[in-house]
Amino acid sequence: MVRALPASPAADTPADMLQASESRLFTFSGETKEHLRKFRLTTSRAKEPQAVIYMIDKTTHEIRQDEDKTVYKSLEEVSYDLPDHTPRYVLLSYPLTLPDGRMSVPYVLLYYLPITCNAEMRMLYAGAKELMRNTSEVGRVIDVESVEDLEEIPGRLGSE
Image (cartoon, rainbow, N blue to C red; front, side, top):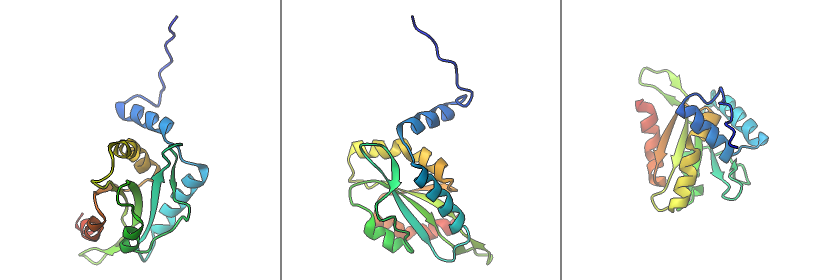
């Protein structure tokens, strides 16, 4: 006998179903969720750039920071710690002055996906991209293929 499961009221649209699927496959520890919240709130008034790098544990599928939990103060520092062949998520808060003189502090997710990474890692990180975006509550996602692309980020943030 096959029994139909009741439809989840939260999964009404394909996007909701995808989000539900992602949240079953990938996890965030309570500590990571709290760090994401604190980072977002404390960087909104930052006077200098701040960034943190997140990775996916291949065996547990937990999205987390690396062991040293570094908060970077420049994109140059971030570029030194990004691996050559493995994707990463970089949360970036980047204060800048707009052409009209107002201050803005965009909070974005840099989706670092080097062209040299293998297909398995590409799929793993692509599958969690929207979950990371929604959980971290960033304003937008910027795709980055190489550490050299990081040099263009301030210009991209200031132009939009």
